[in-house]
Amino acid sequence: MGKTARFVFATILLVSLLTICEATATAQVLYGSIVGIIEDPSGAVVPNATVTIRNTQTGASREIAADEQGRFSIPNVVPGRYDLTVRAAGFRAETQTGIEVTINTVTRADFRLEVGTVAETVNVQASAVQLQTDKSDVRSEISATAVTNLPLPNYRNYQSLINLVPGATPADFQNAVVDTPARALTTNINGTA
Image 1: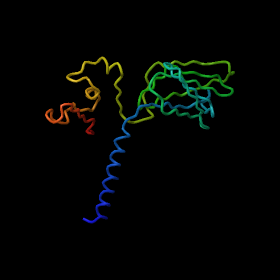
Image 2: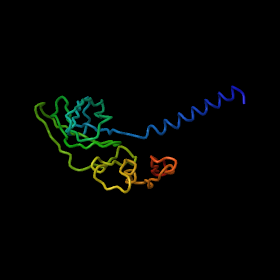
Image 3: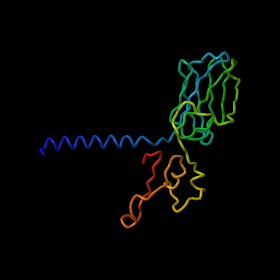
Image 4: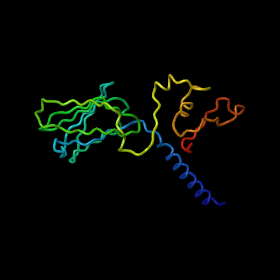
């Protein structure tokens, strides 16, 4: 095999490895997002309204503007409880409280503003968990309470918790104890390692 042939083979191998690594690196999602539409009492859209999101646990807030069609999208939202306030000229401000955002989900929060002065505010409390209709993927989230309090057989590590995810096969050791005493577990979820 000549130098050129080895170089071409090495280049193809490197590109293949990078493609495989890129596909597996994008699997983790640590944030959620909030989307919605802002309308007036007649159902017409309210363009360019100001949307303020505030984390109720940390107090951190962020402000965005809705587009010309009254739609807004807030990406990369840390999981937690949020209050959303919408303000637009000629309408009363409206606040929805207790909106729950979880990882890898799109939470919908639509607003119907009432005509009024800027000094008036309408508060709406979120009460029930809504069906996610903006994304079609299946996800599972193990809460911090579950991680610390659930009784787990044999080993207490994150890999044992993966067995609780729907579609997961029971964890199995990767290597023999003779070769690797500190061996890791391997798990398949829906046939994917």
